[in-house]
Amino acid sequence: MFDIKLIRDDPAAFDAALARRFMEPQSSRILELDAKRREVVAAMQDAQSRRNAASKQIGAAKGKGDDETANA
Image 1 (cartoon, rainbow, N blue to C red):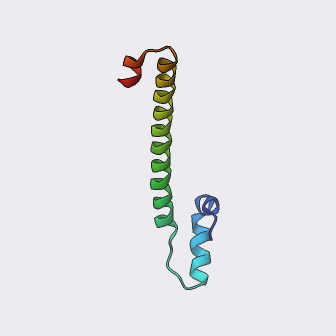
Image 2: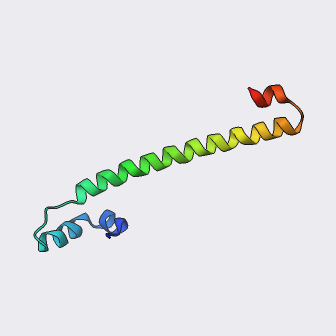
Image 3: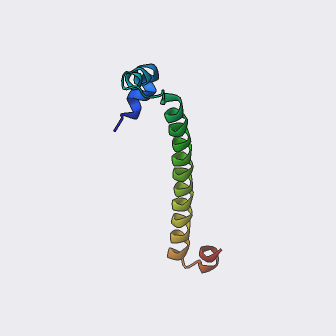
């Protein structure tokens, strides 16, 4: 298992280590996938935040007996 932080910090060193094992450089592909993963995680967290805010509003509306707003 490789430490993504180390690859981000010094991709050339990672590729050099792979070269010593007669492997092709992979840091650019790994960093590309990491960037996509970070985008997806950020989008997921944003969606969860919006869901939590909506749930909070629904709970507050139900607590006040405002079923019309809670069901909207």
